[in-house]
Amino acid sequence: MTEPEKTRCSWTGARPHDIQYHDEEWGVPVHDDNKLFEFLLLDAFQAGLSWTTVLKKRDNFRAAYDNFDAEKIANYGEEKVEELLQNKGIIRNKLKINSSITNARLFLSIQKEYGSFDTYIWQFTGGTTITNKRKSMQEIPATSKESDTMSKELKKRGFKFVGSTICYAFMQAAGMVNDHVVDCFRYQEVGK
Image (cartoon, rainbow, N blue to C red; front, side, top):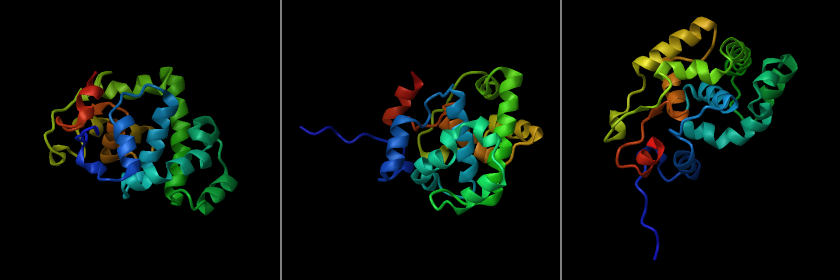
């Protein structure tokens, strides 16, 4: 007997990368600084593009960006920027590449100031996941008051590509908000 098809958030479509990411990562609370930096970097590259595009290139980003090691990225120079601009496996946008280096440096300064980036970033949701009760994808907003505040504070520190929409996508990725629709099989699982 075959297993019945699971009900998922409709944004996954039939795309294997999206389904795997949805089923295993999206909305799961993340407290590991390296993983939080990975999402920060990838969400910045997503600006103006689809998350599917980023997911398809994620392994290439991981290889090109030293496994998302913020200390290494903070020390990238012009030679590395040129190498990244020639890498067809990633999104080759000079502004985004330069911002990834700036953001790595600022990420490290927050780690020093707060002891971890996790401590800093989770303050925007009071240290807990905001569990929404969306019945459809149309109910999911692009921003929230929390992402507005996060964006404002990150920009004040000098971060780039951290508008409220990107911050909200980051919050969804890092499990700071649970935006699985209520009939999705992951809604209850992520909420535990």
